[in-house]
Image (tube, rainbow, N blue to C red; front, side, top):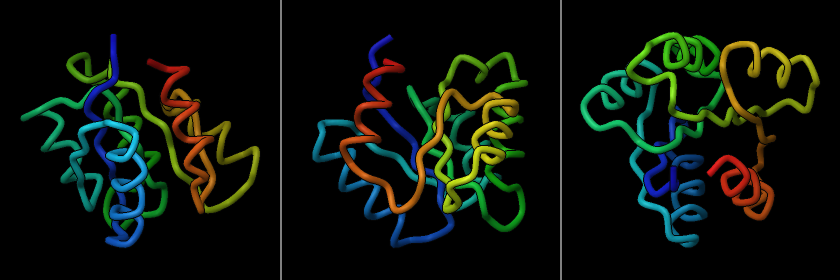
Length: 121
């Protein structure tokens, strides 16, 4: 499946903007959500080809939202890349156990992120 549309989920408007710029510059269509709850609602309406998920958010955090996506038969096929502010193996391991396909560390390096998207596409 070709990845064309990516949903950026982050409670930081600045991070959403920066990630959107990186992705749109690479030719992807981007949708955004400011919370886990908004992500789950939008994914039901218009499923993206991939989700880029922040970890620390109020309400449902990124791990909880990733788990909800991966456990739902309607959304389990959507790959999730988790964005974490901490470079810890435990965060990566926990993200993968929740159903994420990969993770990147903030601040996101455009080449690294785009490489991971291509690998999963």
